[in-house]
Image (cartoon, rainbow, N blue to C red; front, side):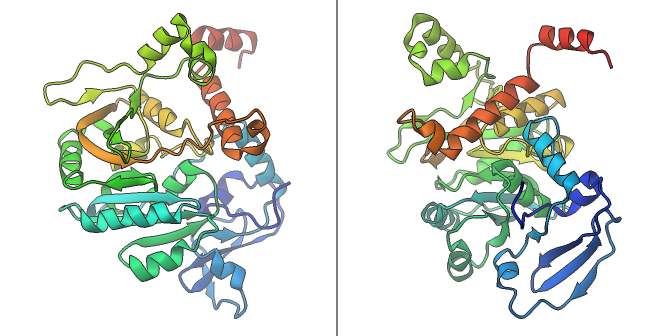
Length: 370
């Protein structure tokens, strides 16, 4: 069962609450507790009331919804964990800026400080905003933002994963384009404006990634061909050193022919640093929150291609990325100790099942007709 208090998005009640339990839902907005009412009611019936004087837990979770899940919601999230359901964007603000920069943080306060300092030193000339989503992190990032970077819009939410955190930032963003940045990245001088200008000049491109580099300046691969079933085995095991494995990985990491302007049309780009247009991200209803961590970027790019948008890579734009590789195994015991590895494994199973080969899908549909 889920914990006694779990955060849920505001638009979730009307979609998943099949039970008739009379539960109250509270949303913390700025300095007010907003009573949404009985779960399952139509949205829009809000009743503001003064917050409790000693409601420290509600203050700590400012910007999130605190409530006890119903049986219907528990069933929904179990099925969603299996990957059969996706949680789309619940709302969006009207665009009034050129760019919204979304940063999702979990326990990386030192990296966040470096990233915000680089944005402060090298801001774009376009009208922009920065939204920092605190994904249930224990770090005191809010104090850092309020004192050092008051121009940053700070929101704390329950940790629903990397995709969910980016979706929460996109929902409140006011940009015509969204720049998704990992907290362990750093903006280099003169990179954001040509990147955004290229995205604005190519509306047919839904997502465009940048060239990544390590802090020492070494090149870091940021785009790939779509995974095949054996790709993770070749990348994670000694099979990758065989002649078959080397050919497979060479194809996986190969560069497509460049276009006249030097850009590349790629299968998918690493979401450590990508710009996505508002029109495209809304067309696919955001990142799929069924992916807690990993494969959400590749899934997003596949869905963009399916909706008629292109995915591109700009070698001329450089962003520094430390690339922590949270799910890397150093011992077989890490299979049990590392939550990131287990999340990576679940996302891989979900991804390969969703994009399983068509012959298998056709056989399953023939065996189980609708």
